[in-house]
Each structure stands twice: as structure tokens, then as C-alpha cells.
Image 1 (tube, rainbow, N blue to C red):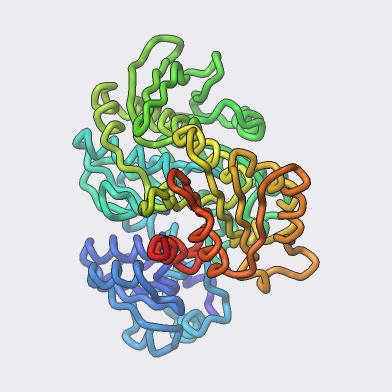
Image 2 (image 1 turned 90 degrees about the horizontal axis):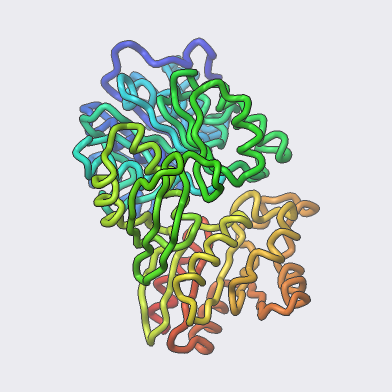
Length: 474
């Protein structure tokens, strides 16, 4: 059993072991520690590409499975991932060996963020993209930021950077920290500036309801120093209510007239979108981006507001946004065969599904949009979103719903019925089809797709490598 007094980071650390190292944030932390000169090892029971290759290329020693022998070198510190339970073999061994241990956010604070201005991006949706935009703006302006983000940035071919500049961009996650610390990760940081994009119910495995979620975000806002800046979206009722309680400096952003930062005219000219930005009612500048959809423009606007606060000039911000390459798995075109575009997106929450479809439809207005959806998260596999999903697919011309592949992880009386979802979609006049497996979806799309179609595949997982398999089949 691990002892509470050992939940600390020793003054002198030369070796670090990470339990569950293949998680997105844990993998990034491992690589950053390695670059900083520490001896780094890690273990996981799900070791597979691309993360396994990524870690190996960076010189991180990965061990398969969890075993007490992985700690035989007695590392100075053990970092415990939030996917790990207290009965994990290596956790038990950590206690038996009286090793010091900590959570991922604790390690980030000590080793990566120490002495830097922390810029946090929080919210139910959009935080990965917004973090990525801001990190690229700072880098392009010569500020050499550090960052740790929950998605791969093509501009860097990485989801992290150990920079020499004074800022670190952190995607501030509301998920719990570790089995020994059930508070949200974002409570561990002390932001100089923060962005709040949205507050909705999600993560049904740890949050009871929207009130529980609001409480977590309320606690986060309470941690922001009065001298720091909070930039918050103007059209989310939960956000607008919660920010009233924050004691820090506040600015709103969005499309509403009173907001300090506001989107003006939007002109869609595929493959780019041009848009105007107003700051305190005055023309701030014109911008271009290859990202699609109004939601992404608002993400860009939030990043512009913080970049301005950090001292970047409007022309430098515009130059960076113009060459920003997006984030992998966010409206990422994986390929085109027979005139059919196959697109990948991480969307799974009903709001994310709706906004993603609206964005794709706005840019491919003459195409037939085929939505392929795999409910896979702890929330999307639960009946909590059963009714919400019936309306969010409206921008799609055809909807393919896969039976959740991990449904056994959800109690039987709480499970989403993918078949009932298709029935309800059909009642609303939608062209919807249910599939029990991925191969059946691929067979159907191969036979029914026509030139000009856009197939939007939405899942937060690998979806049985459906993208590459479908492209080969086409």
C-alpha cells in the first residue's frame, strides 16, 4: 500500500518511472523528462503504434504490462497515470519499496512548468485545438513556448515541446488526477492566463450530473489569481454564469456585440475562411485559416485574445494563423479515393458531433455528407445522451451508427441503445443505418459511395483502423 507521506517529489531526482506511459499526456511527459536529461522508463499494458514508436524514438525505455520487476532499479520517482488503480502490481510495489510517487500534473508542475507563465485552456470542447493554435502563434512569433496538448500538432509532429521561452501552454483537463487524488487535473496549475471554451456534462464515469461538472469548473475559476486573465466564451450559459464568481480579470469572446473580442464578417472560400476580428468594438484585423466551421473560428478568436495579452502583434498573429496546420484527428482528411473524401474527427459528445458536421457541411456544401459514428467514451456509451444524439446528426445526408465495441464496460441498465438511436433518427426522416461491426460499415460504404461524397468518421478511438481500411477498399 502506498503511503500518503510518499506522495511527494524528492529534491534530487535522476530517474523517473511512469506507470501507464502510453497515454497521450503521460507519453508527452516521459519525452519531456528524457529531453531534460532524466533517466526515464515506463510501462503499460496497451503498447501499440503510434505512441510506442514515438516513445522509442525519443529513447524512453518501455516495458510491456505491469510487473514489480519494472521497479527493480528503484527509480527516484514514480509517476502514476490516472488510468491506474490502487491494486496495480507496480503501484503495490511502489508502496512496498517505499518509493516516492506523484500524479502527472504534479510532475508537470515540478519539472516542466516551473518558472514559466502558465497559460491554461479548459472546457468541455475545443481545448485541444485552441491550445494548439496558441502554441503555434507563440512559436511562429519567436517566443519558443513549451506546451503539452492532447493531440498531435502537424506543425510540430508532436503533442509537446520543451521550449526556452517564458510561457507554457497546457491543455487543462477536467478529468480526475489519479486514484489517490480524485480532483480534476486543472486544479494543480496556477495560470497567468486561462481560456474557458465551454462547460457541458461529460465524463459520466466520474461526474454525476451537470451540477457536479459546474462545481469542478467553479473550483478551477476560484484558483485563478486576481492579477491573472480569464478569457471566456460568450454564448455558453454555464460559462457566463460561472465566470461571474471569478475574482480575476475577465474578457469575453464570441459573436455577441458586448464581448471584448468579437468575430465580424466571415467569408468561406474553400480551402480557406477569412474573418474579421474586433477588439473592444474597434477593428483589430483580418485573418485567414484553413480550419473549417464557426466553432473553430471562435477557438482561433480565443487564442488571438490571449496572444494579444501576451504581447504578440496582430500581423504576427495573422501570419501564424495563416500557416497553422490544424490538429490530427480534428477534421483531418485522411485521403481521397474515387473522388470520395475520407475525414477523421475525434468528436463524440453530442455538441462536438453537431458542430463538426456543421463545419464540414459549410465547407463541402455541394457534397453528400455521410456521418459514421462509433460511441466509445464512457459517456457516449451511456443512455445519458440517448435523446441528445437524435438531433445532432441533422447536417448529415446519411448516418451510419456502429454498435459500441466496448459496451460491456457499462452497466446493462445504463447502456446507450445504438439500434434505438437509428430507429429514432429514422422517425425524424433521416437516412440512418445500424451496423454491428466495422467491416459491415466498410462494405456498405465501398458499395454505396459516389464521387463527391465526404465520409466523416467520428470516434475518440482507433475504430478498428477504419480510415485506412476504407481507403484501401475504395
